[in-house]
Image (tube, rainbow, N blue to C red; front, top):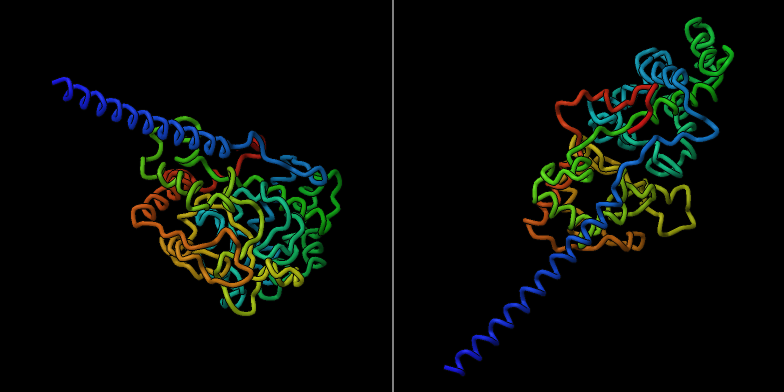
Length: 350
């Protein structure tokens, strides 16, 4: 009997030890998740550069210019032609449409949260600032096909635009720099709406399902997605070869030919409203989010320029489903008016 009691006691001690280990592991996992969640707290205000400070009148002028086809040669295209509010500020195409209904070389990037995109903009980083972006699509023959000289002349000939420029800048002079400044000011107000993920980050544990929470752990942990898609905007604003794309378009490598690591490197896009923005990648070559996850799971094309962060993950089907569930929480509610992603000029805060 004493022997049996000793055996039972030893077993009980062992079980308590296992429970303690399990409890410790659970606490450690919860602590790690809490640390990760802290990295996704939203900012308190939209950043505007000192060289182009915010004003309601400048933002309103930019909004008007954004939606007005007056900035295209034949008055048929505007900025909103490719950056549509109802398509998460993209166009839903694999590659942007040319003026002649052909295809451009690259997919239209979303404008969501562009105010937080530090450093060079564009898939290959050819634009130094947001203010410098507008000139290229406006003047490109295959896009809006209007020289900046003619754009300035058209706006200068319009009394209502002269008045709008006077209100925004203090005098009615229309210039290319002012046109670009107004457009950039409006675009910085294009902020992603509040998604279920944001409610969860704010403390509502019921805002997202357990599958998405497991996906969040994978995203920040073993899958390594947060290595590039980091922070509130889900981008490190940098350039990486993730093992996709071949041929003549070598991305950032075209502008930085002496850097082997930047060959086939393209800018990390935000993941906000991502399940509304298919197809994916710089060239629209990946049709679905499931296919994107499969691409990362395989590790993409193995080549010298491929990022060291990209490698086969060997995810299970369940883990892939969890990642997909997490990504779906980054999209604002379907019942939200899409144009509300633009904050009113009187309150430029997310």
